[in-house]
Every structure is written in C-alpha cells, then in structure tokens.
Length: 128
Image (cartoon, rainbow, N blue to C red; front, side, top):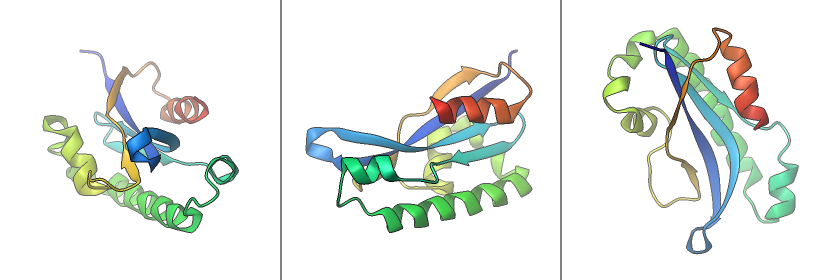
C-alpha cells in the first residue's frame, strides 16, 4: 500500500455570506510518520491589502498557538493513534473546532507521498 499524506488549508472567511475566502496557512499531516506541519506566511500584507480590517494580531496569535501544538504533537506520536479513523475530528480536537467563525480549516485533501523528504512536500504545498 502506498503511503499517503493529508493537508487542510487554513482559511480566513471574511464574508461568509459572500463566500469570500483567503488561504492563510496549511496544516500538513503525515500519519504514517506521525508528523504534523503547520505553515503560514510571515508577512500578512496580502491579507491586509485585501481586507483592511482583518484581525492581524488575532491571526498571529492563532498561528503561534498552532505552531506550539504541532511541536507537542510531533513529540507525542501516540496522539495519532485514532487519526486514521477520523481525520476531521483530529483537526477539530487538536487545532480548531469547526464553527461559524472567520478562521476555519478547509476540507482535508489526500495525496500520495511522492518523496520521503517531508520538508519538500511542506515547501511545495506552501508555495502553491
């Protein structure tokens, strides 16, 4: 069986009723390796120019929190024990509960692990 990885885009939903969404980060999950990555831009100029009233400080606080959680998860691989049964609940439980707030993780997408270099996968997803 081929190894897979999943990822979910962190989206800032400025106007839910209009469906306006701007991707502000990506959560990458490598279940077989029991590793997680969270990538986000250091500079939020794109967000600032698109939505002048966007809560930059709040987003940076979330980014910092998600990064700390990633560090903890990567040190405690046993937390991945039930990941494959329900990846969506893993994200809800470990990162951000799905609700109607402006910041949400999008649907989980699955891809083939095309290299053992997980950093290369991270970099490729971040650039896209």
